[in-house]
Amino acid sequence: MLHLMKLAVGVRDVAHLRSLQAERAAQRPPLCHRTRNFPRRAAEVTDGGSIYWVIGGFLGVRQAIVDIVADQWEDGSACAALRLDPTLVLLEGRHVKPFQGWRYLGPAEAPPDLLADVPGQGEAALPPALRQELRALCLL
Image (cartoon, rainbow, N blue to C red; front, side, top):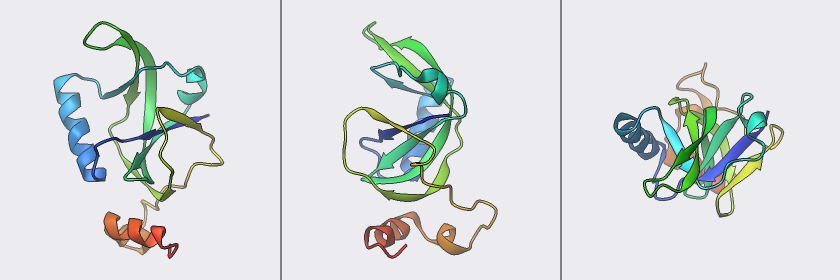
């Protein structure tokens, strides 16, 4: 299993990502994120991998990659479509330096999910912006 890490350019927060993806899925199902290069290690990524989104320099949410298929941009040029599960999973995130494209992320380097089975407690109870600020100050 292998993951991808990608900058969510122009996305303000997780709610904004959710909204943008809902619009895209309604216009052109299934939910996909298209990228110029086809991952050479696609078989490893589709074997239980996720895309880890960097929003505002903060790695804080992921979603499962269902499949990776060849696709085309509107101008007919080739690209890869990452078919995504619509469920966004909040993470015990961290700051990430900017980069271009996407990066592979091994399971050992991937931040753990926030505990979904304990709603309203611990970090999960904090608003995302506050959680991000506290992490930036190394208080979480």
